[in-house]
Length: 127
Image 1 (cartoon, helix red, strand yellow):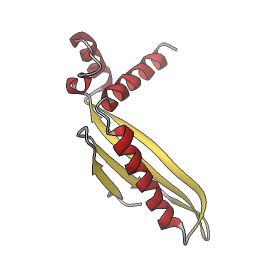
Image 2 (image 1 turned 180 degrees about the vertical axis):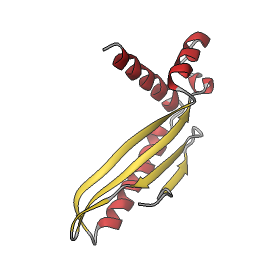
Image 3 (image 1 turned 30 degrees about the vertical axis):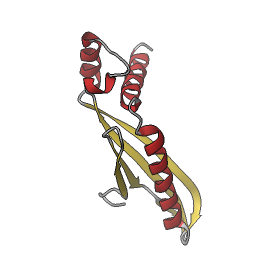
């Protein structure tokens, strides 16, 4: 596993999608191929143009979540032969890029994800 991402792309909303290889050898010639997709989203008021949040609620969100939240998505394939490993990693990265450009790059993605993380945190706190 490298400290450098396999792939990165700038999305149309200004965020950067990164793909990391977290694959692991599980047998002599078999792998669990795992690609971690990651986007760091700064918690900023600019994301809320289409999802208005008043100043007081934004301050609460920022105070509770900090300066940024991280979107992560794991894409895995199990029991991949060693000769197919690199091909599967590339396929997962290609799929992540396609999804990133279609969905994660949407203008409202950052605001919706920030609100989701905040709501999840509120639910956990109220249990």
